[in-house]
Image 1 (cartoon, helix red, strand yellow):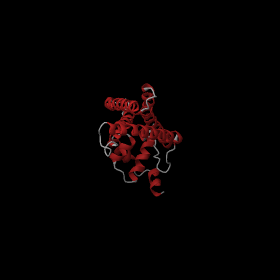
Image 2: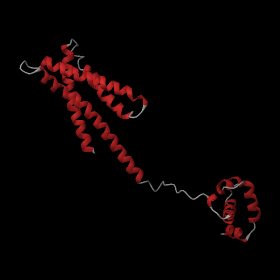
Image 3: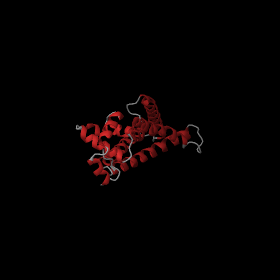
Image 4: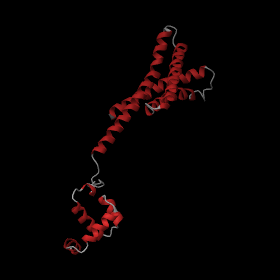
Length: 204
């Protein structure tokens, strides 16, 4: 997975560099100062990168149409600008269609490879999180006990209630733990206090 991610990033950097060079030169030829021409390809190709990431992040959500629109506009402008630059700067013996086709490859690859990089990264994160959840930390694992209200025998719950009272719990707390009314706990304890079983538990 890491090899794939590194490879896609390397290809994306190469495609961005080629497109950046062509768009910056086209900006200079169009009258933009050389000290500012570098900003134009950042704007155009930056929309492709940001739009692709946003499309993947908002996949299936209602607001996904907006990054899709930015992505389509950015890709269209970049492909058209790269093609125009190729036609203008190509040698006279090179067919304009060939020059435009070659120049259109970097922005299209940038679009595809950015999407692939984001998908691979999300896939890698999902794999790591799934592995982590599959191997919980036993030191912090919470042991879930069977609720006392599921105990079928009333006598067993009465004995547990008596032990809870010895530990200082109120009738309300005992009732919540055993699943009965507090008045029922009161009746249980009225008959349980002083019995040999409770006295034995108190001295143990």
